[in-house]
Structures are given as structure tokens and as C-alpha cells.
Image (tube, helix red, strand yellow):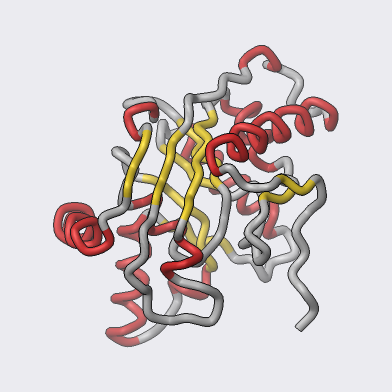
Length: 220
């Protein structure tokens, strides 16, 4: 399934949607790498997975991998091929499980993608980042490559199930090296400073208005 997605589906999707990709060569060819991007739509993960030159791991809800029957097994295989790592978010220790899953990918020399905002932006602006990205970078020494997605919210706006043909741009920035903070991962101040630097790099790539507060979804 992984070969099917990478060598058949990925070229087909790129042919149909023709995403414009900038700076993919900036992703280090080997070793652990963190991709930190803005988050506008449900298809952001696919946009990154299908344009990055290396396989990318993402966190996914564990329930997506536990379906029964042919359909359930096919969905689990497809998500695994896209790079999703199952995490039980209903567990009280879901945050720790997510960090552990990401650390396993990075310590194995892989590429892990994260959206520091934590959820999709519903107003198109870039919001304050959570410090998980800093924790991962400081714990592993992995460089952070900022990622800017543009147009994905037009391809698949909230509530739309079938993607529309709209221009999409994926821009990869220069890797950010935080080795100067080695050994300081326990400091809240350092984690905040690293996260803010990452968000500033994303903002410069995406040209979004930055809002220095966490994004909160409106009450249902």
C-alpha cells in the first residue's frame, strides 16, 4: 500500500491539483527532521505527505485504525501508507502518548510533521503555537523546517467533503537549528522562545496575519 500511495497515487494527485512547491530541497536528506506548518484544512496533511521528498509521519486518531471489515482494514492501510501514527486521544495521557510517538519517529531518524497551532485556523490567521514542537526539537536535536500551506482552505473548506480544484502552494523554509539550547528542554522560557521563533518563520513564509493567542474553536 505504501508503494501504491507513493508511486501511483502521489503523482496522480500532483497531476490533478498541480500544487506549486517551493524549497522542498531544504528538507535534510537524512536524519531526524521536524516539519512545522500552519494548518488551514483537513487536506494539509496530504499536501505535505505528497510534496515532501521523504516519507513523513503524522499523528492520527487511534479509532481510524480499528475499523472492522474490508473497509476498515483498507482505511487503516491507507492511513499507515500516508504516514499516520495511531494515538489514542481519548486516553487521559494522550498528550504524553503523542510526544512518545513523535520521539520514536525522530529517534529512528525519520521525519515528523506537526501543526503547532494544534487545530485548523478558522479565520485564516496564524495563531500562537503550543510548545510541543519545541519539546521535540530540544529533546532530539532535530532541525525544524517551517512549512507554509496556502490555498488548501479553498480546496477543502470546512464542511466540504469533495476537494475542489483550486491553486495550492506548499513552501518549505530553511531548517532552524536549536542546538544552542541543548540541555535546556526543561525550561518553559526556552520552549516558548523556540516555539515563537518557529511561528515567526511560518508567518514569514505564509504571509498570514499573526495572532499572539491560542486558537479556540467556537462552542458547538
